[in-house]
Image (cartoon, rainbow, N blue to C red):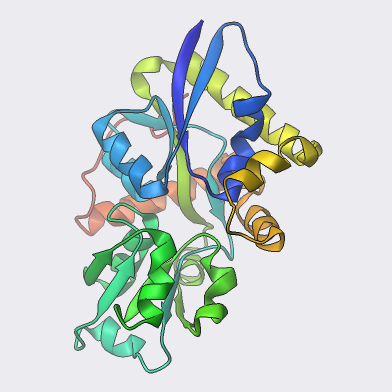
Length: 280
C-alpha cells in the first residue's frame, strides 16, 4: 500500500471536505496520512517540500509551482467570500492607499492570498505584522495594529470586536477582474505523476460527496477541530467556502487562478513558471 501525507487546515470547510477521506475512506492501494495545521504552516511546509498533497494559499502555490501542481477539487474559490480589511472607526483607508500614513496591518501570514491581494490593491507592500489569523481582530481592537486582514470566519464575527470593514478585497477583485476570488487550492507533488494525482482528486471528490449527502457522518470530526466556534458560524463557514468550485475548478476557476498568478508576476511578487498549472 502506498501512503501519502495530506495537509489541510482545521477550518470547517477543510475538515468538511476531508472528513470522509480521513475517517471513512479505506483503500487497499492508496492510503492517506492527514496532517492538520493552520494555513500559513501548510504554506511553509510546501516551501520545504514536506507534504505530498496539501491545501495551500494560491500565493504560496505560486512560489512552489516547480514542485507542485494543482488538483481540480478541494479548493476555496467563490464570490462574496474574499478577505476583508478591518479597522477601528477612526482609521483612514485613503491615507493607507496613497501611502501618506504609516500604518501597521495585522496579517495572517506572509504567504496568504489575503496579503497578496492587499498588496495588489495598494500597488505597494505595506507594513505587515504577521500573526495567527485568530489574533488579528483582537490586535486591531486593542490598538496593537491599525488595520487587520481577516480571513475565514472572521467576516462573521468582526462586530463582536467593535470593528468595521474598511475594504472587501473579494469585492474589489470581482469588480476588477470579473472572476471569482481564488483563495486556496489543493496541490500535489509533480513527481507523483498524473495517474496518482487523478486518483487523489477522485478520492477528494468522493469524500466531499459523503459530507454533502451524509453530514451526520462527518459532523463530529468538523466540530472537534472547531471547538471555539458556534454551530451557526461553522455552518456559515461551510456554506460560504464549499461550492461548485470546490467540487470542480472548471474553466472559470482555472482562469481566475491564472489571472491572480499573472498579476502577482507582473507586480514582481512571483517568478513566472512555464510548467502546466494542473496536475493532469
